[in-house]
Length: 423
Image (tube, helix red, strand yellow):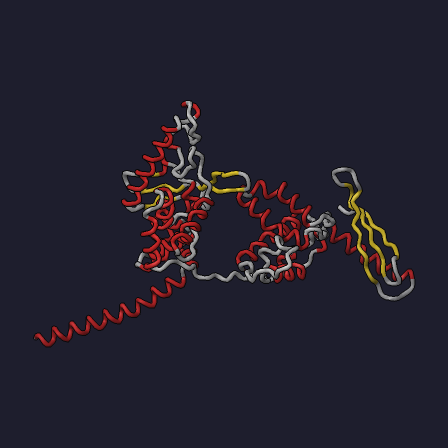
């Protein structure tokens, strides 16, 4: 609580207000200061006006409307926020991604005092992020050639805003800021673009060329394509998750990479924990892959406890489906590396592992599968999420209903005429 204050003339019509706020945890006195301007007049009149401003200032402090630690820089506050809030709330992958996003924020105004950051600074920052070449400008500061035309996506720019908003929200809650500057700007609008997927001919060429590849890579593609699995879900699979008898897979964890380590985490959401059906042909490949993996395990003499070099789990049923040569979990990025090399070798259009999942959903919708079923396959929490992502396909399918109904009515009318003539 602010206990007392004083006023001191600092200019012709300006006065410095000083309010004592007690002591901090280290015993250092807390002082709040503010400079106010008053109207012309005698010294006594000006001081009277300054004291009225002082009373209002004290009231603001006591209501928590004045920051108490605003002199901390944004970078300092980010580390404070991460240690006292984010580590307890966020998973390791989110923490790692926050660090990645904050690099640009730090470069823009990381050394700026927390209480000096205004909405205009955020607006300027977002505009800068949308400029061509921002992706590589940090790595090419000393380069003489102009930056490439590629710019950040609106989704990535929005993530910068979301992180800043979370930071400032905590600063307000902890009485370090009087308001959240991110609340006073319109967040960048995310422009959703339909995912570019292979057409049926391109997919056919891809699958045909893939027949000569190792089983594990064929399986990665087919699990993403027929099961609508995320890359991290594929690499989180253990053999105990595979139900060979019922041609089904249980998705209940994911394998992700954070700098320096591969970690296992829960699925993206509760709805992502799901059972999915898999075609019998894919299950046959899984059996072959399992047999090959077991042979490698035996060749290495089994696990360390068995005197061998296999570094998977001691229990065979807990082993990962996709491993390195010695049984350690495969790196999730290895899927991307293989796809990149594979399409280059075979002269195929660009594609990423995640697009196979979108391709799966797209073909299911095109073939008439209802949205709720597709949503469950994808592991979306709500069918509305699926509808938002694939609205362009659903619109096209809806338009087809007009042609379907028209044909139905024509056939029905024609049949009635034929029946009438027959009588």
